[in-house]
Image (cartoon, rainbow, N blue to C red; front, side, top):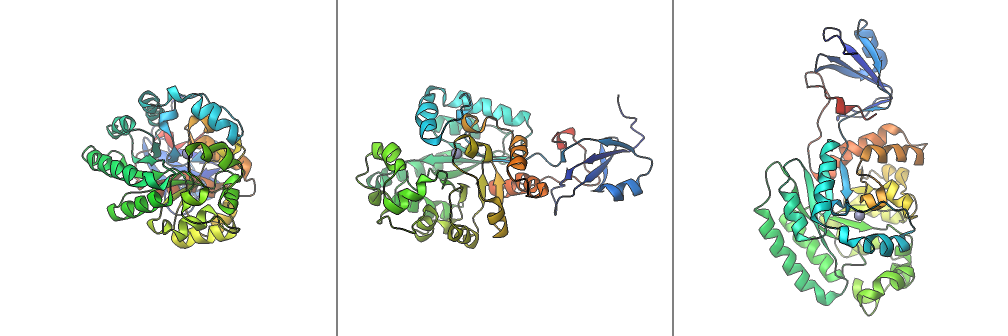
Length: 386
Ligand SMILES: [Zn+2]
């Protein structure tokens, strides 16, 4: 039934986040015609609009969430949940012919259909970067990925990347996505390249994203220089030892976060992805440096990497955003589903925090503006998350 446009509609929901301040639960929005007349707590709006027609929309009213970490060029992959050390060879490598421009464009189309608020996308190859930079319906950051564990590769890889960035700057559009850099992880990028990229990004004002502490074996690698990450992944990339990659001897108490901090990389304020397997000291270092963190709860669950300690990061005042990672591990590009999953995963966490992180945290990470749901603005049905 089409609502009568002269009667105000009072839309009620479990969580209302307007883009400003904290979220409300339960919340409500008054809509007259196609315009927002008021937002606030359900009781207040019931009292102010006694003649409004009340409609329960269920879950959440908020601006569309931001997908702060994904790999759009893997959007043609099949989803597959497998333990991390099987998922990389069987899925990432196994389906690698599906990686590229076609997948990236299909992923960008999917984000547009979801009215995504913005994206933080890791780009693996130059043709994908060029295809996505041309998308005016995409906002956020496209991070070109660097992957080179041996220090002697650093100069060549850095030089090539700097040249590419200089060329791509001419392709950036005022309303389109911006360029960024993603040194893949602290163990697949040598200390020399990591430091050069961080210094370059800081000097040029380019945002950074780094995958950090995704799997528990990452800690073991930094503490012993050995373990499954060395044996199953790094050894095949031919560094002599892990000490050569990080430019120091692994030791008890060393973690990937402490390593990045002591290398001076956190000063460039990279956004840190995953951060599942961390110590209290790591969280304190990240908070001190002012780095934001992106969590990908479904991907971490599907690859059996552990659970991000959301309450500890929130208590330390770290900005948290949500991402899906690729569809191959996250299952879809819809951050609304990520929030639903997180609500099951963190039953004691206030759902208002999760929604705010998915919207505001995401916009902060990718440097875009959070739209406001407020009096006088147009109402859009996509504000209802369902
Ligand atoms: Zn990722």
